[in-house]
Image (cartoon, rainbow, N blue to C red):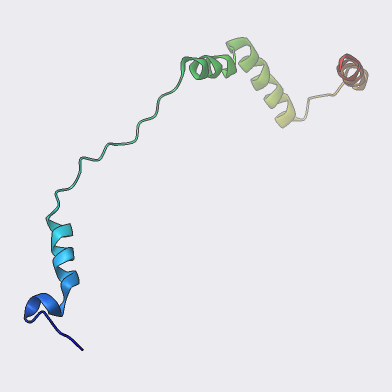
Length: 87
């Protein structure tokens, strides 16, 4: 068996590599950035309820909570038939 290196260099060569890694200056890391397209912004505005629709929803919520909401079976059936006849 041939041994060429004597001293501290041959004992733990990986320690030198660890020191090099520690000495490397940290790279300027960029932060994550989120950009919302104009189309997505338009979709958000469309999805917002209008004031008139919001008031109607609030009225229906109150009627359901009070137990005064009555379902019109004929209108419901007519709406279902209209929906499926169009599709």
